[in-house]
Length: 436
Image 1 (cartoon, rainbow, N blue to C red):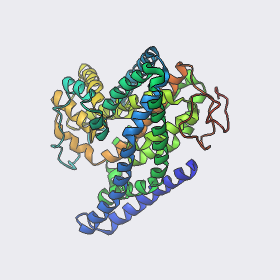
Image 2: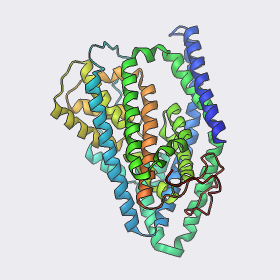
Image 3: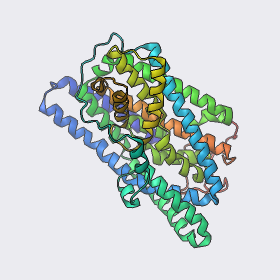
Image 4: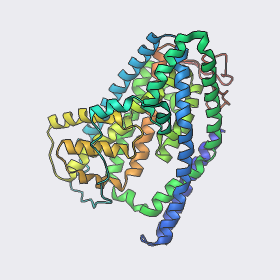
């Protein structure tokens, strides 16, 4: 099933690009027919992403509550959370630093004359303060947090609920079983929704290419190529570091996460990949008690692709406007991006908002963001896929640190709903050598 879905997603990508190119070539740019066609095609990914968002909040809440309650003691929770945050900080700093090095090396902004694709006046930066960030973490109501798909607030509520259920023991067991049943229901619903993924990918790419054309990729070719080269280098570095802990099995992880990775890339949405990422890590040997805690935490604090993009794009704008920045200013910018980025989960065009906030603080022209809007969709695809890879690697390494990484099963084998934490349950398939 997984292989067939991956094939259909690829087919959807190719067909979407072909149809988009045909529409762009067949109608003038100001044609009402072209605009209507693109708007109609855009409906497919919008409906799909709404269906995914419908699943995200209850799935995260249920997996967090069951995962935390299953840990049994708060010391394990603190240890895993501390290790996760330590990994996230190191990975984020590496990603931002690598972006700064590469953009200084390649200088993509020098000598290029961009024309603003759209005004950038609608980006609000005033909310990105430390006070706002702290207040946004604490939920006023868990219902409101779930309604807004606010991962940080859901995480805080689930943290309290999971620890309380663990303290209640047998009295809390019915609620834990209810949460486990909710996870099973959400994963079953995910299976239904995922059947629409190829159509969503087809519509998303066809709409973008129809309105902007294939030429936009060539126009920003140097910037896009260098950014994707930086992402590839970061992936190589990430898996290399992971191999120090997981051995050859670190590279095997890529095979298991290929479907959620392709889905995240083609839809430019980390949320669309989360349910499938849970299942992929189940097959890889990560107990749900670990992934159910680390993945939602990573979706808020471990945005490696977005980190590289913010540093890459900010220096690109400075170069495009011929504004030199000293090494000290760039380091200060790195730390600023590191802090402001931690509040961007769930914010529309979040990376652009963080860039705007940083440009304002360092006296750079905010209107330079208009230079990025033309290809932001394509760049967003790459950084979103990198976010997924970073969180998958982090979860696998932290599971290894805890001594809980189990033998993997065949990545394409059927997976039991709500798998248990022991190899005897839900792991009937091809067992591979854990060190392979």
